[in-house]
Image 1 (cartoon, rainbow, N blue to C red):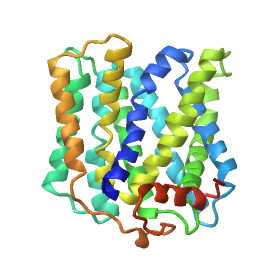
Image 2: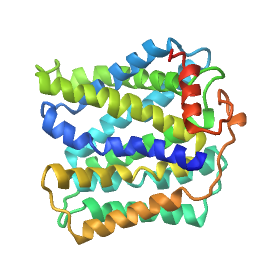
Image 3: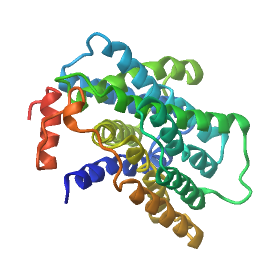
Image 4: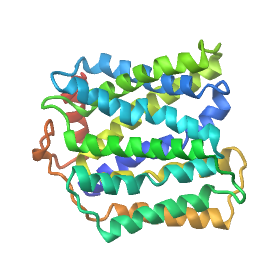
Length: 316
């Protein structure tokens, strides 16, 4: 396996993990607490990574980390949950699937990546494939929900592009940068959650298990792999891994919840997965030496991962 293929495979674990969020939320967590769930995903994970890395932002990185945390977490989670509550699940997923198109446009503006016919067509194909997987006939539209879904996709897309544009400070690993963003995003969600939803609900052992999975496996590890992938791949390549999330959710729903998965859904999966694969072919890749805080190249991806952890201050 080539180095790029290894990076793509590791990065793809993030949206695959996010595809399990619906199952965990519906089966393990208290109902009707989306903002509290967003808070519990972000803040404990961010604080854990801060404790592990023992690094705080310096200088301009205080506001950069706050901006990235707001875009990738603090604004994204509440808007995503608002869309999920105002729209049927399939419609919300389809609205969110326009993210790759946002990334193509924002990358042209802020990264100088000129959009190609292939990048536009793969982004459109990915959204079309997702719509076949999740969209049901007669699904209702809600303007507030649609606006929230589009803004959540725009927020995450902008976070992806600016994460790529700013890189990270020299000597700071991806693990530390992930901790900064999750902590900043969690602190943004904290007052919103308490203002809208009130005091935290009573939690049983099943709830705690679900929140532990979301915070550490589904968020801390997954966002670390996601941000690390943004460094090593083009912004469009990373965002075109996103369709793996609804595909995974559909497969989990079929296996674990007995949900229907017919020919149309299977065709949509094939289209979306094909667009994901095409999105990984070629494309610009920022050399490690050109990014602030990047690491010395290694022949083995496992060695690169060790460098990330050491750069973050984690003792192996």
